[in-house]
Length: 173
Image (cartoon, rainbow, N blue to C red; front, side):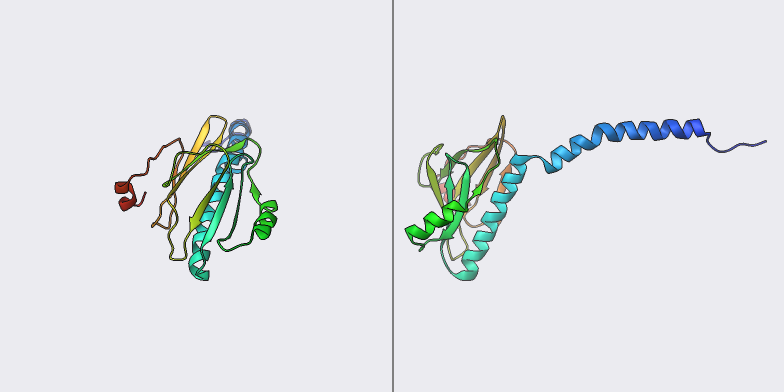
């Protein structure tokens, strides 16, 4: 007789091994994809900046992305918004999840800020004030670079410090 199939025991062992591998791998993959607050916060900031750049060109209005470093949050408004309306918009700000903080912001006009508030200007002609934002959670840091003339934001999954110079402005930083 020529038996060319697998026994029930062999099939059971293979199914058991695959089940064990999935039991170990799935929670880690799920945590990486869905529960990473730092990546989710970076994606939210990037998409908001992208939408704001598009909105400023479409509406032909200068916009401001207002960042609060002390209470990690940001909100947006047109540059000509009244103080009363800005205060109202601040209440509806996007707040970063617990554990995620804004480690610092560097803009072309000054030193690196680690406290207070920062205003990032998006202009109606499609460019943005050059800015570097550092988001952190624990020991992990993401560096987000808003290039003035490029529509895409550069993202580094570590701390990268930029110093703005006249030559850098010419290069888009």
